Image (tube, rainbow, N blue to C red; front, side):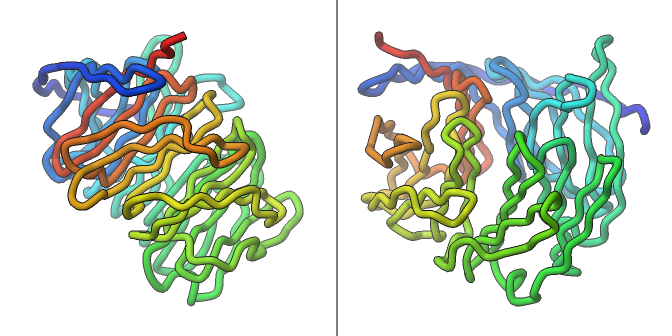
Length: 312
């Protein structure tokens, strides 16, 4: 474990907007050159990868600390709570490996660093961090007392893939052009649970389901961990990204609709359309806080933050 060096940066402005069913108030925006990943740490704070490093960003748009990890090309991958310490953690990949940032009660950030040559994605899964080493086509569990490594068929790493973890268990999922794989360390199994192309995936711990889609596709599917399809919903537009909506038990689907952007909200249990929000341009990435009160979108080098309020 090591201390992280910090440095101050600059701030940005805020405005607001609305949508039917709920109010989505834009609380802030930040210019993020070479943007590479955004996670919401809590309702008021996020971390954004930009210009090869990682920065703290308030959801009001103020940029704070930047972190000095080994290597370059930081990509912010996931955020959650360490089940052992109860403190918040953020997971970052770089060209030197995987970095698990932790904050102690005195608000001093430290990180545990794990060396990988080809770490392309990482996520929180139970009490561990699951890592995809795309160069070796391997899944590895680190930041745990029981490290696990699973070799995958090389075909699964041929193309765009995405990793997702279940924070309530050790299970993880890999979405690939060939289908979805579930890795279960407790059972010692690696199995394909869905054969449909699914380069975009997101696990919803509230609804207990995995959302899947193909890049540029027009259908979103919800698959349970045993491979059972819960629902499949066609959408009017090309799917760019999916996030769970935290405690809301919904999928947030980012769409490209003839060059305009839209966020579509689908019920996690039925697949019914709950709400939608228009964006000026399509968002390549969308994410939300665990409590479902904050949403972030990435459009080019711009990250926008929204607070979500019920109308009733």
